[in-house]
Image 1 (cartoon, rainbow, N blue to C red):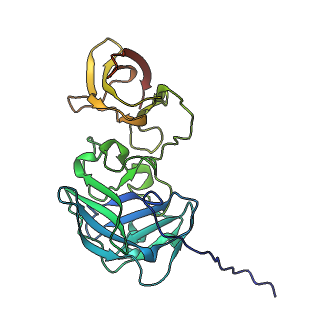
Image 2 (cartoon, rainbow, N blue to C red; image 1 turned 180 degrees about the horizontal axis):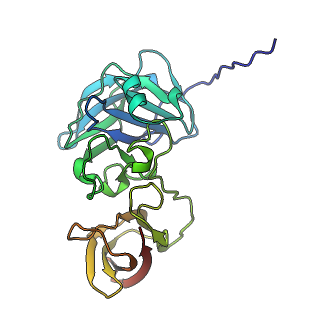
Image 3 (spheres, one colour; image 1 turned 135 degrees about the vertical axis):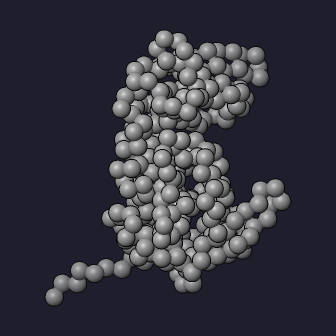
Amino acid sequence: ALITDSLRFAIPVNPLPGDVVINELLFDPFSGGQDYVELYNTSDRVIDLYDIQLAQYDTTFGIISSVESITAESKLLFPGEYALLTEDTAVVREMYFTRNVEAFIQVENIPSMGNDEGNMATVTRGLELLEYAPYSAEWHYPLLSSVDGVSLEKISPNVDPTRADSWHSAASTAGFGTPGVKNSQFIDYSADLSNSIEVVPQVFSPNGDGYKDLATIQYDFDKTGYLCTIKIYDERGVEERILVNNEILGTSGQFTWDGVTNAGVKGAVGIHIFVIELTHSDGERQTIKKTCVLSY
């Protein structure tokens, strides 16, 4: 008889910062639900989850606390795989649709996650910090009537987890959470921008369906030190939103607009103009205008 079952073998390596990232957080579950933390292996290395622990991190004093083991025995996480950590896998599977139950790991304890704000961190067995991911209920899409049961998804695994615009509410069409599978708000940053600034997509529809919900301003420069302000105007030239106000940029990154104005209402359907003002410490100044179309 043919043997159809197969076992995977690999020699894991010690995790380094950036190998396994915090990719999704549910910190304010539905009534009767459970918090969860999703990890994703962005590296080309096999990592043993036994070597990673969850924790909380105090940035002011550099203190690691509330350390909790993920697993008491070896459990390998291969490149491109997810690990969904929760204290009750059955409850999460009941409340959210998933095609990847193999990713679910029932842990004894998750560090306490406040409903309004908090942070999650990963550390090694030797208590070396791997990643620190703060979160806030204010990072959710502001026009949601309720954020109960809505997870925060990282828009791309390798973006800075400490920035609010690296996260977005999971799409309503995905059931407000995507445990163990690719995030509904995932944005592909593989395109080579090479010393440019672009707004993608050209048409976006911030209706929470997980398809082009965000307008993303991607930048890539050949030097650091730019000071950036981004203002968004409607097609009549009326200022709608100050998206970025005198922020210092690195060489590459992104900002996102969810279609909400400074007044806290949805932007109008139609063309919107991004006026991007860049000032460099060497005296260079430039103003770049980009457009996109908002539709629902």
